[in-house]
Image 1: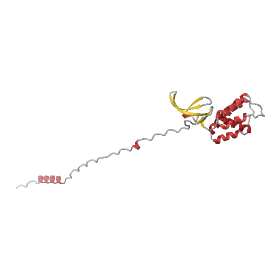
Image 2 (image 1 turned 90 degrees about the vertical axis):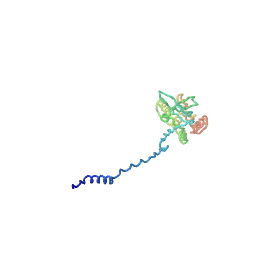
Image 3 (image 1 turned 90 degrees about the horizontal axis):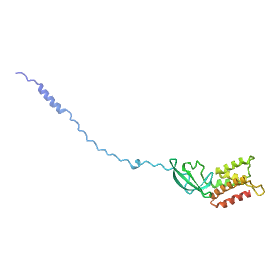
Image 4 (image 1 turned 45 degrees about the horizontal axis):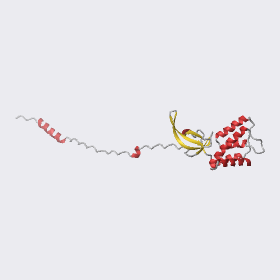
Length: 214
């Protein structure tokens, strides 16, 4: 008898064994649900920039170099040359005048707060000193005096008063000297009254009394 070929059996056996031993495909793990944490409100909210602190406030008394003591009565918004500007409203009751100064240019314009008591003390001490009159033409000196008055500095204004004051035994002032003297005296008296919270007439009498006693 002829022997049967074993190749088929081997093939079947191999196929079975291969089927048995073949690794089963791994089951895909179900994706885990991810939970998103909502960002905190504090992180989302951007901090608002702080408004710049103003150098002056409403109802403050201030000194404007060319006009003297005034009072801030409010802040206004106006459109000027297509730009929106905020303005300090400064009233000068004595001169019946209102000045509007842009907030951004207030300090640059020379507008300042009232002098400290120490600064006023220095100004009053200046009145007691000896006059220092330059030997130059009056027109030149007049310009220098007016520049000192318009500087708004109380010590400089006191220097004008000291130099132009005339005692009873001295020659009288000329008309132009008298005008500048009175302008300086009035300017210093107003600030002294505002600083010490006294009447302007009382402040003027105090200054004149110091000049007579010097």
